[in-house]
Image (cartoon, rainbow, N blue to C red; front, side, top):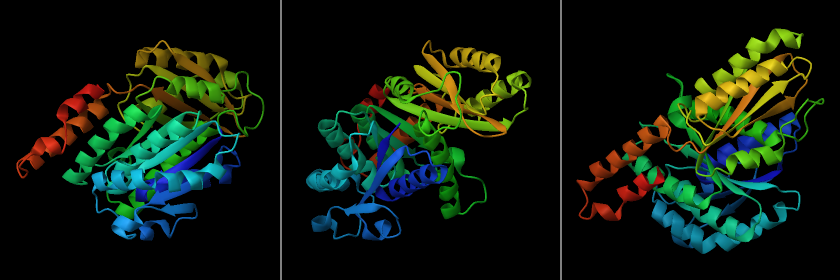
Length: 359
């Protein structure tokens, strides 16, 4: 899937950079270009991407301090500047646009929905979002910001891929090291998803292409992507169990949004040397995924690679009913209730009914 990335805010800029780097290092050619947008000049300086600093008249390059309402206003005012910078990057090759943002901070949570809306108005290709959910230890403001932002992103984007920080932070890791590892894990998953049908090696029996990714995401709402791999035998007949186990691991322990097993649509791509991929294993895995997700729309295919391993890439569309999403939404509601004790008009900060409408 040929795409252009738009990283919004600090976390969005870093993840967009990781995605672009993964694609370039692998030589897939799926990421055509990338742009970083922020209200804080200091967050843009380290990024090796073209960048746009917005809100200079309001915050003078110092960021919005977690105020996502201010970020939305700033992005609305400066959207034309962002679109002008992005326009040369969105060539006729582009098949989709991805807006990448952390949903807990100010610039990403407030600005990303605005840019998704504007991009959808201007371009005919699908506009997707990649949203990073804050961990439970990141504070009440982050939970409230993410609840607001997620509600709006789901409405504006063609689909929103979710990454749960809590699922990927390892115990004992530094904050910076933990987020770097998260970006690397997500870059591999989304990078392989974008590479479907692009610069793959060899000829598979039924290669996954861009249209199948788009059709899976057409379910809209929230989506998740999973990955797992294992050593493979040279003979495909010996890899029936290997294919099955990698698909199961991708869903059960390798999803960007854990416990997202109820889905409206699914796609499973088995990656590896075509001569090592078991057709029987792939078909059994596809049937298992259909039963596990409760979806009748389960697509499947190969991702040919020159490798001695078998890998599984699983995309789930329409995962709003997952336990992980419900747990996050309840956390956001609780943050609002806690905040309400200190506010004169708590209803103005957050509308719980609108969160309920998501589900």
